[in-house]
Image (cartoon, rainbow, N blue to C red):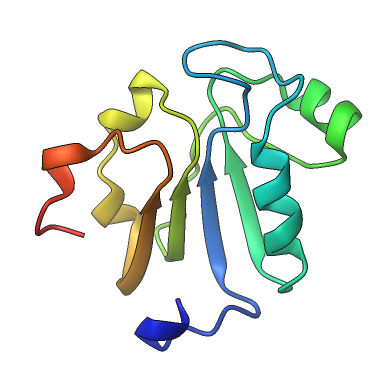
Amino acid sequence: MVKKDIPVKNANILVLGITFKENCPDVRNTKVIDVLNALKDYDANITVYDPWAEPAEVKHEYGWDSIRELNDFRDYDAIVLAVAHDQFKKLDLMALCKENKVIYDVKGILGDIADGKL
């Protein structure tokens, strides 16, 4: 984000996925929590979206709010694709972001789709 002159403080960041693995509702032992806690230190506005995870369980286990459906917000500075859920492969990530953005594909699921587009 810094390389693209996007201020991290107060940035709107969408984290896609919080479960332990793709297409599974289990949030136990998820490493995504480490990413979330690191981002929290930068005072970013973080939205955690995971259609597989139960929001009450995420809140109970980790203290984070999560959503199972994306709202109409379309102004993210960054997206972190943290879990390779099939639903995420179909998302129009470009439509969710500002023009100047960062999309970080932790799992490499975008592959050739992302080449030259992100």
